[in-house]
Image 1 (cartoon, rainbow, N blue to C red):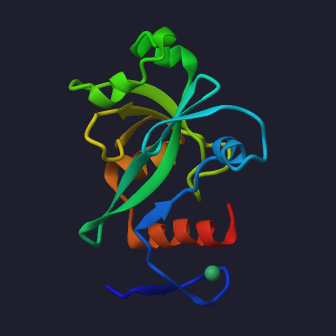
Image 2: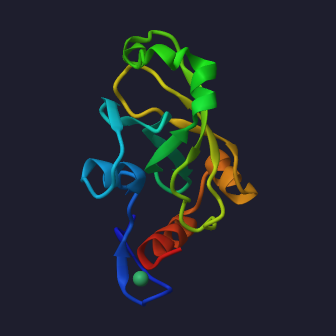
Amino acid sequence: MKDKFVCTKCGLKHLYETLIEYPLPAAISNVTSGRKAGEVKLISKNAYIIQGEFIIMCILRIPIHEIDDDLEIHTWVQINKEELTKVRDWTKENYNDLLTADAEILMTGSLVYPIPTYGISDYPIVKVNYLSSGLFPEVKLIHSTTQLYEDWKFGITLKRLETILIHLIHGL
Ligand SMILES: [Zn+2]
């Protein structure tokens, strides 16, 4: 496989990337950097509680047909108070239970960032299986645009990967 493709937007060559990493959501970084007042609780690597909401780094994996690889999107999922309460009694602030849990912890949340190409209005709803392994939990899509759902389920072509990367590089 070639390592670069010609961009239909700017005419230059861009690298094929199969890893997209999103930065810490502004809601958290604004507080941790002191730009805004508030309280952020770091409960494990890449898992935060802010204003009662749980924000965790997760992986959305989209298979790529022509190569033996996936597009891995490292992104952030926001899980609201009500959902957290369904999972566990949080009134005792026993967040450490999450880290020592030996069973599956299934939670429904939404992506903090839209995925390039699929539209700014698409903040997919996902299911997260939060395990205590320390790895990023993988998300399953439960509601999104049809196109994103089909791509996630059935995989994408390299041509489509190029489209996603062009959107990422040049803006949504
Ligand atoms: Zn370009």
